[in-house]
Image 1 (cartoon, helix red, strand yellow):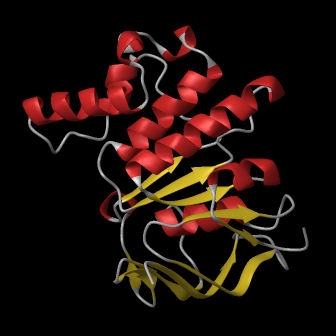
Image 2 (image 1 turned 120 degrees about the horizontal axis):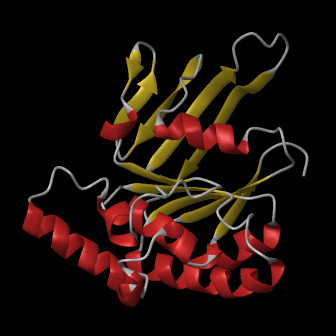
Length: 214
């Protein structure tokens, strides 16, 4: 099993009786694209934050590619988990160009290696001609592609997508779903995709898990 979440317990501090997870378990194989569905407030985004290391579970373990990243007295920092995350609002830096946004997480590479990796990612998302643009100068769909490229650029073992299509117009969604599926096919990335929209998940993922009573 590539990703193992076992007997996870979590509640946000200061909220009595607000347990998000009480013994939740989940697993996926390497290369799988799994969708996480369910109504609002059931912990879909929280699960991604726990896997990414942005939150700490009260109990339980999280294992990524054989390495325990969360458990009793264990908490591996987010930057050391080899996990890429795309947030609902994409989180692009408005003062940085497309190229600079993609290069942001590549500080450990040499200048030449960083330049080559950015070039590869621009080709992957077919945005070579827009490399010098700023986020406000490109469409919502293009911003989404840049956010995915930035998350994939460091070569993460696992890609986490938190409602990445929710801000797009309905008319644009079907086109972007196709682009995302093609992008995932080309990268063969292991991917956990959270959405309240089952059509989004069906278009991209090979399996859908439901949290709560959908």
